[in-house]
Image (cartoon, rainbow, N blue to C red; front, side, top):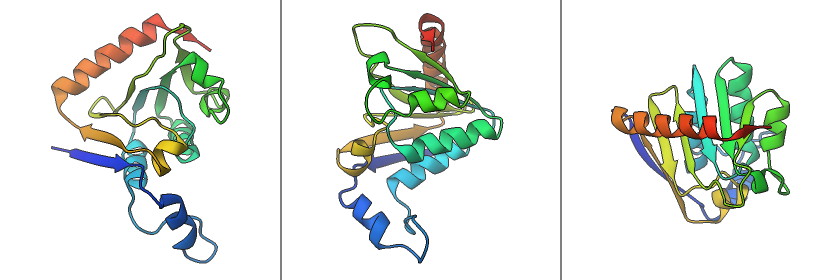
Length: 166
């Protein structure tokens, strides 16, 4: 059974990434909650169904682009207002060929979950933003509980049918 709980909003993470590195290397050399989350996302071999308020964390967007380039089916549902906000990566992901749908509503699409290969569920308070990574107190729980994965999968499919493509 695969389970994990990541606490994001690691104070000083940005400082750590830029002061504790090898010459000519911009990456942290200790596991962080973000790097562990990216590893889970990067483990996708067939599909990534993502339902998030917004994406402004470039490291997350880059992992999604890499997965798409590897042939993983990536689908994103996001909030229409947030997609147009400064720093949003959603339009860039769509331009790269990733399927994106938005809610087109006066209300917010405020979910924060992802399903990896129809076997892992990532869910929690974490907005996929730079601020959430470096400052907010956030959480992501990763579970491989088939019943929960199935329930969230059905919910994702219902939203996918309901919302419009961009």
